[in-house]
Image (cartoon, rainbow, N blue to C red; front, side, top):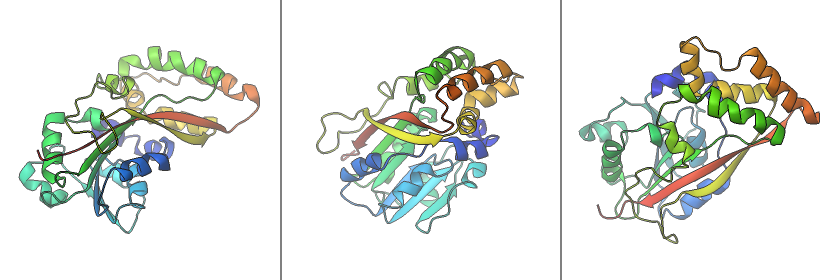
Length: 263
C-alpha cells in the first residue's frame, strides 16, 4: 500500500482534504480519557494535526518515510515509521505499552490493512474496556452538477481498471468492512456515521487531488495518463462555466467507531 503513494507524496499532502472539527469532537466525546492517541497510516499527518489539539500526546505512524516528511511538525506529535507488519511483541517499541492508548484512529487507510492482524494490535494496545477505535473514509468529491457530470465517468469508467479491489470498501462507505468492536456510549451500532469535509479549491488544486490517487499512479506506471488533454479540457469547461475559479469541494466522510470492551 505504501508504495502506491510514495511517488506522489507531495501531491497527497497538498491535495487531500483535512477533516472537520465535528468529526474529532464526536470521536473525543466517546473517549473518557485524552492522554494518548495512535494515528495509524497517518500519511502526511492530516488527522494527527487535529488530534494533537485534543489529546495530550499523539503517536502517528506510517510505513512510508516519504509521506512522513510532509507531515507538520507539532510538539506533542511523535511521527514513527513502522514496518508493514508489526509483530505484537514489538508494538511497545514502535507505539506504546499494552493497554496504554485511549484512541486508535485510521483515516482513509483501514481498507488497505490486514484486518485480523491489525485488530489484534488494536486490542492489545487500547485501554480496557473503554479505549476507542475510530476509522473513517471519504468518498468521491462533490463540486456542482457540471463538474460532477465530468467526474462521474472519469471515476467510474476511466480510472476504474486501475483501482485496487479494496477500493470497493470505500465505495461502500465502510458499511461492509469487518469491524469487531462494541458500540460506544450513546450509540446502538458502530456506524458508518456521516460527516462532510469541505475544501476550497482552484481547478489546479482539484487536479492535484486527482493526481494523488493510487489509481492515477498505477495508470501512469502502465503508460496511461488519466488526465489526458481531452479530459482536462472537459474539466476546464465545466469548472469555468460559472466564472468562479475557486470552489467549495465537499468530501462525504463515513466513520466506523467502537470501543474495545474487555476482549
